[in-house]
Amino acid sequence: MQQFTDIISAIADFLWGWPLLIMLLGTHLFLTFRLAFIQRHIHKGIKMSVKPEKKSTGDISPFSALATSLAATIGTGNIVGVATAVSMGGPGAIFWMWITGIFGIATKYTESLLSVYYRVKNADGTYSGGPMYVIERGLHCKWLAVLFAAFTVLASFGIGSSIQANSLTAALNYGFGMSPLYCSIIVTIGVGAVIIGGIKSISSVCKALVPFMGFFYIIGCVALLIIGHESLAPSIRLIIDSAFNPSAAGGAFAGMSIIMTARYGVARGLFSNESGLGSAPIVAASAQTSTPVKQAMISATGTFWDTVVVCALTGLVIVNTGVWNNGGEGMSMTKEAFSQIPVVGGYFLCVALVTFTFSTILGWYLYAEKCVQYLFGNKGILPYRVIYLITVFLGGILSLKLVWALGDIFNGLMALPNLVSLILLSGLAAWLTKKHKSNFCS
Picture 1 (cartoon, one colour):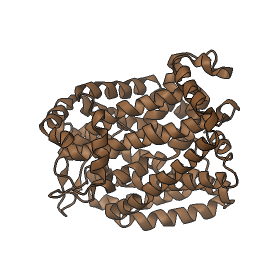
Picture 2: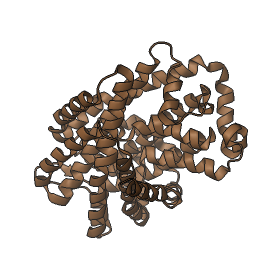
Picture 3: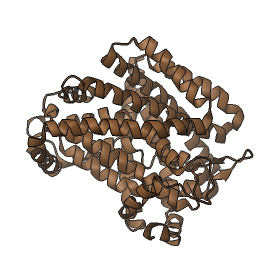
Picture 4: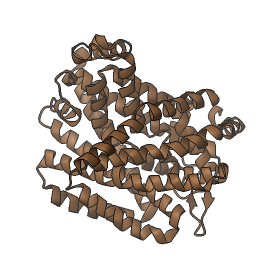
């Protein structure tokens, strides 16, 4: 079993190494220029996300769709993943992570635009969409659409349920000393109570939870930056300097090349914001909107909030508190940083992890449910729901090294068919953007 785990881990490392990084970052750059730097309109998307639209069709509000996708996107990657990037690539990795978020906005916009454009109305009046419908209806390639949907369902059992549940129970054990078994039972019941109501129930919970968890976590980061305000300016300079000259960080990073620093930053940034993986567009396709470009612009703000804001703040805290230079890794580094908030620091981190991971479990369930519906119809939803809850429970009490590796593989495989559709249909995306340009300029 250990040998099998090592093989699977090696495959995951290869997939999330240069091949996928080049494809994802290359697509980000291509679409940025193809769409005349759509990122410059991100402020418009932020305004539209909180303004209900009249004469629109869909199942949930634009903000609910954004909140649900953010629920699935903002998770342990924003806390542990950022710390891992710094521990492996040095402070300069934060700069490259931030750059990835900037260019990733164009990809998130495009995949959401196409998913809304090619969405379908179901017999019960609800809407379904996502890369599987884009690939089938836009590229007329059913088998590739089926592959994407299958990879998404398989990925949900790893990155969506068991891995998040494991992180959640670990956070409760760290913060409050709760038994993993009791935590797993409570979490499983909580998730079941929400998902039984379908998309409207999930989006309602996410709409309430995401603003709270985002604000709560940002407050903690800002508090740490205020405590260490005297070293803030030097920390920012160190991040920028070491992005182009890793030797500026000294220590273990003295001999590191720019390419390796960039690799760790880009990899964690791509993994965190999921731009190009095709997950967020699945829920964007259910949003109430009058034109695809409006919801696409709103969805694109998800990458902005996830990477350009939350990941950047986490990275700045890791560097500014100095814990990056203490030899820690991942979670231990983040814990050490938040412990510098007197008395309540550990609880701040615990609450952030619990809300982040719980919301991610909900968001990923919705992604996969839509894919199950695409593959098997409504008859497949109940069996999938039962299996998903079982993986949530088991994830909270088992060691998950193999599951992590499998989750990474299926998560990465989702991107391949999605990226093909984005490149081949980029002309349509550019035409729709130009046609509805008034949505950005009004």
